[in-house]
Image (tube, rainbow, N blue to C red; front, top):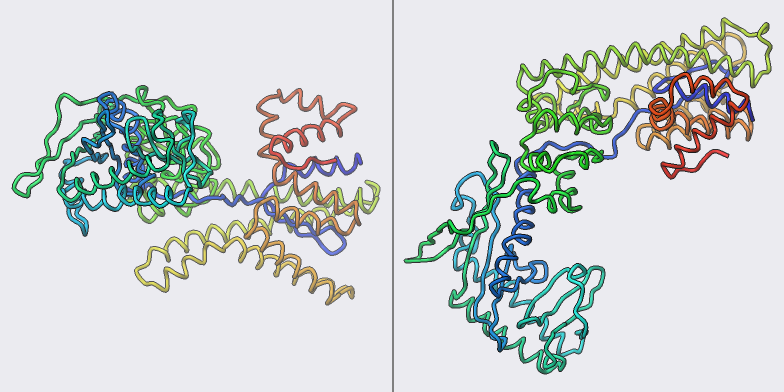
Length: 594
């Protein structure tokens, strides 16, 4: 067991290596290339407008609704009516007669209010005809549905006031009397503080009366219309809410601001919105971020800037401090995944251009040059660093193979084989990395071509890791087959098995997760040692997949280096390594190693 633990520890460190060994040694190939679960999308004006529109509606519900309810208005939840209106309000008298109807549209804009109201097949948005049609399609249809449900006895009467937080949609038919639905339940419920509505016939009569009233108002354009307008000030980082009233005279809509109904919001004043789960989801989807853990560390004012795409360098630094977000951004731009754009001198405006781009080809020449120079540094680092690690891995693993599997003494170690294995591994990785760099560059150039067929060829670069790995494996297997043929030990069956296994592993590494591909590689690589060898191979694959990021890095950050070496040189070295590994695998909710 101690030998297995030693093997596990010694192979934790080498990552992103191509290992190729002669037939008399273990052949283990594991890819730890990170394949992001999501690709960062460009921050388009469309996605930002969609986000702001949702936030505008949310703010109207939280702020303007409170002011209206204080004067007797009742808000009818838009989701209940599906009417295409942002907000709908009813006002009832003491006899539950509908005395007024108000439609409110939320706009989060840069230009004028008039320009934000679009034209549709049923007329201009918020015009009398447009509003009338939306009322008929929404609340009238819902009231008609309530009539049928009452007649069939499918309405559930509730005598205790429901929790407002559990209600997902609501339609009032009088003061403190309403139909509602709750999340995760298809039933229609009714609550009223008035005993007269306990009787289904009375509810049915009131619904029909309300239906007739709403229909008359829709037909005769007897309703109020307002726009809750939101405008962001980039200098003060504040959001101003202004309520506009719409009146129609001589077939023309007159839009007038209510100067007495203006509210100014800072990030702190709307922190309830900025910290809500819905808003966090909006922001993450809009920016296409894979790791959103940074968000809780932002101030409310920084979150306000993020909402309005008013990014400064501090926000950008916090956002892209995450390795996952860096790699997602690099993947979107078609760069080396290890390119660190935060290390170069970029202005906030240049970062906005980068986030709005689909690829590096979308950037202007000066900005593209900066980004390409950063990628060159990453290419040099990954090429020489990876080649060195591959050589060390080849040497270490061959030594372990001769010592632990073949039980050779140090005197009988075949050092030529050790050096050759390290050289083969280094050459294989260098070839792989060099070809990938060339393919990335060629792919970007082809994708930027005006010829469609060249663009399609450029997209083949997405499959470069599989193509390159398979080609290298094919070349190495061919080399060893020829070498064995020359030595008289050639086996067609063994060569075929090697080729099939390598292609299968390459496909797994490309199409599956890092863990899945490495488990396959580990199990195959350890199969020469029987069941114990397979177990060790799987343990090695887990270590390769998660060792550096989830075990070594956290330990290095929390424990002094001297303490680490002291722990590893102690009597319980094996147990210490196992404890560290299981601790972090357990935090990830992955199976621990027994």
